[in-house]
Length: 247
Image 1 (cartoon, rainbow, N blue to C red):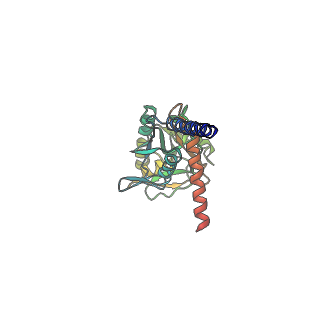
Image 2: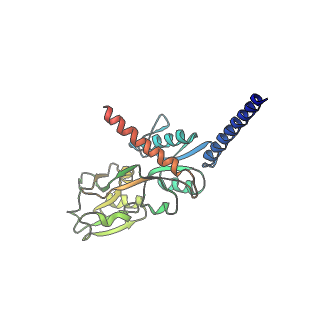
Image 3: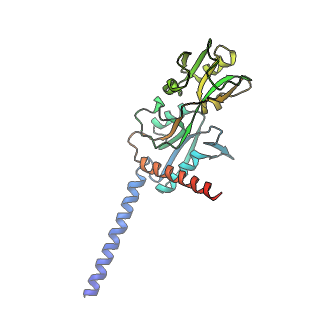
């Protein structure tokens, strides 16, 4: 009788443990809009952060997103966008659970939204007409420097910018056109903006002694993913350290 009672107690304990496990899994997957599915929006910058090979996202940001999915036990769905504005609009409209677009912490478009710890850094670039290899502001006297909206929050940290005429451009396309035509001597832009604007008429060089932007992943308001995302970022950095030591 006593043996049977012990078996019953063990069975009930095991059942309780299994139920508890199921409950924790539901709470974990409840961090996404669709249980068990992580919808990731990403900007294809054609660079080391995000690129596309045979239609599949590759690079630093997709690698971190995949680690988030592995850590949280999610199936992942990528949606690739052409620009950050569309990405952030989709996030605010409930299309994504997580977005990556080399978005700096200072970006005014993400005010009020949960963000991750930084996963990367990048400097500012000077956009100039083709064959103008300007990488500092010492020759800017007498000309106007166009400022993109992404670089505007940190522009005053740029060495030598105090005595220069500056004009902020809400339209990156317009800034690029005026640099190409010579109306602006140069444009101060982020790395991703520089990549988007380089063409047959324009080029870009990283600004010497540039302040550094820190890039973050962004989540919808009220998201429960932040700890999981930060854990994945830490794991990604650790993986890179280990790979470097093994080489």
